[in-house]
Length: 421
Length: 145
Image (cartoon, rainbow over all chains, first blue to last red; front, side):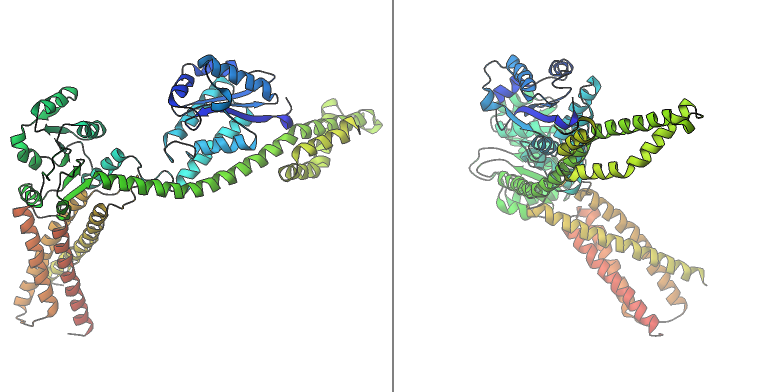
């Protein structure tokens, strides 16, 4: 296939175009990927294929000069997994510069559901490594994906896109870590055993060591303890002792009055010898009196505080996305220049071989060159051709990145091989 | 040079260095504490020292500085007594006042467990006293007294 006619194309479904029930049908597991790559690759119509499959997207990247053939294969694959797929509605298609920009944006996490999430870069890398191992990633997609990985890293290093958490649970963990450092040796107390307590337990249990729970209705606390191991149940009457003994207190009761007042907090803090105390108030109405937050050594965060930080971080990421888009644009342009230069490479190679053959033919018939051996004549022919072609070929490659490379390749072909048509 | 006087100089220099580091830690503690309370912080993935670690470092540095300052004051008073000089100087008064503040911060920490902003402000107060003592000393030395 001539490089000058090759196209990079992508077909895919993502969270933007398809609901989860469609995406989960189209997800391709890592064990299925080698087979899928081989099925999609075709020596004449799609010599290069890379498949990216994550929980939010399934995309097929190909290099092809027969877009319809490649599309037919992609359609075949998608509809084998999900026969009811409405192709036009769910599947998007990008080609050439748009496809390159798309993969750069994906790797930079600009196209992710959670803007700036870090996992996507590793997933793009894995997709490329798998295709490379299967031999389905060639010069063009190879360069395209390695560039995409470079763009992803550059965006993470040079912009604020990946900084700051945007999920409430990750923010809670980060805040607590900023107070205590390592959480492994800390004790966490839950006052309340409802859904919020369970969600907090789910998010934090991997970090903190020992857990205690108390609830007005003790059976609910016991039920929670059954679901989560290493959770000690404390009777409601002993909740003061629980509050005093733990470093992190999570309150999530439906009490209409604050369960922790300023006076209580000061008393508890005195008994704790003023060791830092983190209180996450997930109750609604609030379980902690507002003035508790002013006490030295007590750090109180309620649902609104956590959501506020999440919103601010999201806004900062959105701002950083503008800088990231600029990087993607610059890198797309650089890639397109390289690609244009590549498209004349084959013509240049042919032109060089043609010139060498001509010089060699002259040398073979020239009387004074007959004293030279075959190898010497060949070497001489290569040297003359190299010196003769150096300047024009350098200029040609440079022009290819600025001008219409395909037109230059055609002009070269016509001038030296086919003549005017 | 007299060994006692040398000890006085060395322990004072080392003590002042410890207190300068303490002041930096105390400011870092107060800034960090303020950020955690402001609830508008931009959380970043990074290795920022936790409040508890800062507090621990602050206490250890204070203890080291206090021992050195005590040695510095003790040897200074001994040298002064030997020279039978009863000159009052502001720098000595500031040094003794700082020693008292640091002693109070340490006692409060050991007896009642005081830490956090209160301890950091106490530290900064003591460090200001040490700085004034140092300034007084240089003024006196340069003034040829």
